[in-house]
Length: 227
Image (cartoon, rainbow, N blue to C red; front, side, top):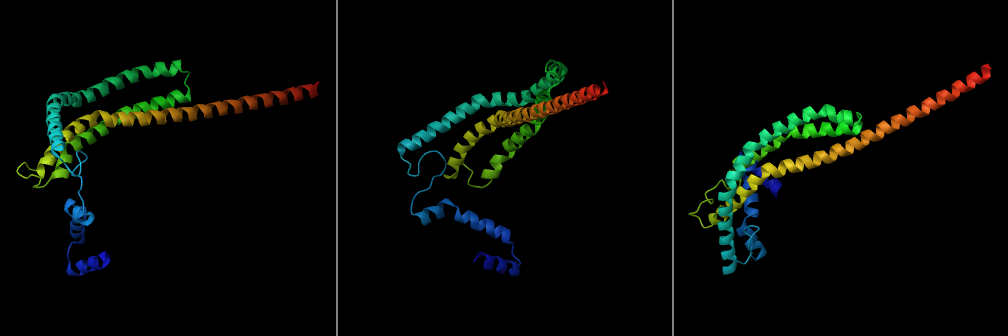
């Protein structure tokens, strides 16, 4: 049926992508889900499908708490956003100073070299994650609620306003959470690659030792025959 409808729209010169988006929005709308399933739907992750007076009071209290938490934490998040690039520069400076000493004390092992390489790459790449968090902080709310329903004059928009307060706290934590995930993943990868490099160096050392012993035996046989 959808293929026939798409072919008909192409013949008529209509935009099939816009029509497809409208159909998908209609299928997943709460009104259609309520009619098709003969039951209630969740407006969000909070509350229940059959809200009562206590649920409404809890939601109002949660919104008030999120508003108060935002007033207290948003200045701190703003200071953290400005301080993170400064901390990155200072940490990189200290790491570049310590690299020769670390390599010297580690005996120029492959494991240490691989680990330091991944650490430097991870620290330099933190700028990408901060810019991604900044872009989400600037555009995510508009992308989610860029419509007339996102208004206090619309009763359905009151739920969106409550979500805005919580989303603001989430956006503030992204500047710390995303780099932590990135550093954890790169640290694990660096340690694993360091172990692989260490195993390779040990294998090369064993081959070199075996070759030396074989050459020594050959020389001993040659010298014994010469006598």
